[in-house]
Length: 225
Image 1 (tube, rainbow, N blue to C red):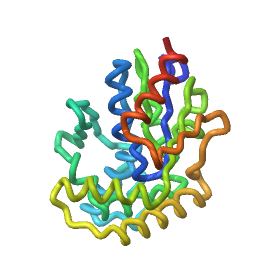
Image 2 (cartoon, rainbow, N blue to C red):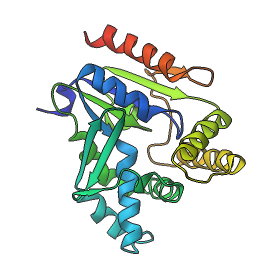
Image 3 (cartoon, helix red, strand yellow):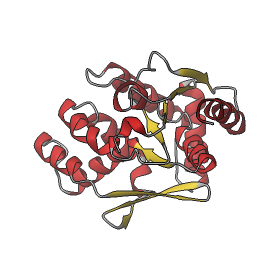
């Protein structure tokens, strides 16, 4: 079955806006598959770092084409395995995130990952989490949502996540890193971070995760049920 024949909810937005948590809950509620597209870039970056290939575009493309990744929803978090190795936490460190953002600007790499992402669309449906799910990867998605929030609020959320995991973090530095990542993601020539023309834009700056989840589910039920 082609991906366009499978119902897709494309949920995009910048780093730190809470896409992962919302997508996980929505996928569980609908009983659908889930795609964390950002993880594919993070996995490529992690693998390239391990193989000293970060500055070799051809090697990056080969790594991307052969990604052996599996997403498993477990209670309130998404478990990610890469070639049988548990990498859920390893790919979430800031260093890997920065590397992923940089290599994501390479057009050839994005092209290599395009078909890999589309392959996740399987019955009964897919909740796709990313930055260009609605604009590029799944342009025919029945429902497109774009979450946003101020850099300061997103940095606070990221800071809390890191602290809860016992990871030291600097709030002002996180704000700067997020702003720089936003600049790179929104100005790159290929698949820039932008809301699809027909996307529903939700500003989550002053919303709780429960409020965001409720609004997304209301729209999902209206569209898919």
